Length: 289
Image (cartoon, rainbow, N blue to C red; front, top):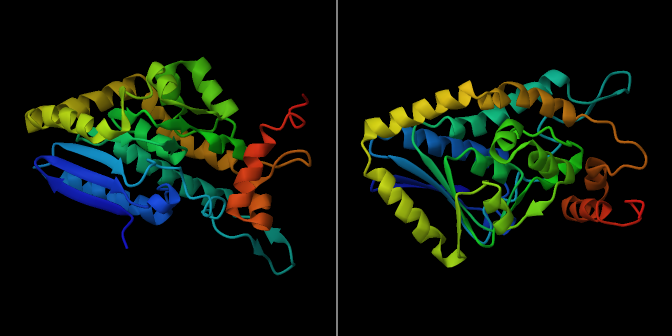
């Protein structure tokens, strides 16, 4: 059963994340379906704008935590009984493919619009940041809570975030790993506008209707010019170094007094370890208060 739906009509390509029971958390298989959807939209001359939406109450809760830490391959034991973790080359190769998916959306020659609501965090936030336009419902919650896994700033979209909201707020987003509400993300330029939840799709339709009336050549040339401008500003450089920094950051060594999500997940499962992770960072005793 597909977890990403695709519908093209009236100059629009509607791409819908359809895994509401998991808050549309992205699996590797879903990412492949998503890339296929953007490829289909770009190959269809009748499509002039791509709309990314979601089923359920949330846009995307990030990458499925059940896969996190396993995407590089399983730990093995060699003939001498020594534990061998996945190699750095395996990490870099995987992360290069992973960041390439967001770059695919970022460099799309068709304008892209994300309609976000509820949780839009982690990989979900990257999907929104890769889009040209973002309209949010007043229920939206955006952030990078995955930074509490130990990444502490090795974000694929760090350059975009610094240019968009300024270095100070970008560092706050990545170091404190808070999840921000609708008024906050609007004030920081993370979304274009905020509307009541029941008006989200209508607001999206109003904007895409204006885009589909534009000449096809004008739309594509405009996007190509935008991509060149991003290159000249140095924003696109994040796709050159992001995967290297991320592969290093996911191989950190945890000390005895630090929270190790991977170990906790192994011992207690995804749900329990996720709750324990959040509690670790808000417990006054852990903060020395």
